[in-house]
Image 1 (cartoon, rainbow, N blue to C red):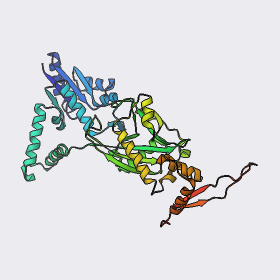
Image 2: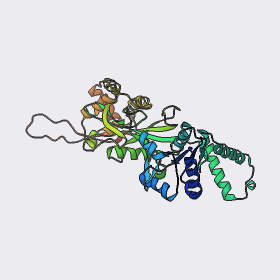
Image 3: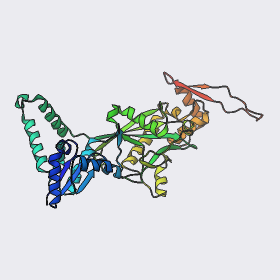
Image 4: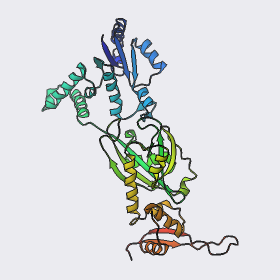
Length: 384
């Protein structure tokens, strides 16, 4: 039995009469014809392939439909699906290998890494020839040379996927809370994860811009404090492919968040606040777990916050514009996870930061002076 795979775009649609006759004869004689395409499988597409191109087949594989089923993040641009190029192409390669196809005809030459066919070996040999060439004179057509070299460079310089993760933190009831989302799809289905997503190459965005976009999509907020934590690139951190992520953290006053409609994204089943100091116990009590290497990221985040709060004004990012000495001290105690003497705390803060004490406003007929409201005005130029 012959088992053949044929791509649609750039192959079948360039010679429909030939491939229509070829696929008909193969199917009629008991062979397998596998149609492989990036487009989503629909009745309209199948009708077009049968009636307009005259194709016959026994199997049909859609890269888009496959990735939608396993939960891969897909971006639609002008109605066309887009995702990481490596994930896209590897899906076809794995399909060919799993179905023991003897030949796959495609307009791309990169499948040889995952699936070996006569065509793949031929394409690979052409790349070796290109590598050995010393001058462009070996090819008469300059445009052909450029195309071949482009394909060679794509095969030579293998590219990992890049993502950003944004740990969104706030203070709720004197506890440092962290927003996590429950994954709806594999891998790590039903596990909790830090919100994040793939870098969108079509937007030509930087890592910082991608992190800010993810933050706004999750919280509806922008122009909020955000800082890079660390880059994580362990080979096996994601079972799908080689993915390198840069983690960020954002500190937001809860007063800015409580009126926001924070909801899980389309690829998440739920969104929930966890205690950064106690998330492990909270997860364990519900027999739940974190996805990927996010436990490592959260441990690094906790250490970073505990270190930075002693020499930078990050505590003020978690407070509204007006606050009290007690509010400020509680932020320090929450992040450092220990009690602080109020008198010494005031002295230290006044020595480092410029704090304005507002005139207290007495309300109603209640006795006593209300707590003084404060404003943070910046860092002093020198320490006392």
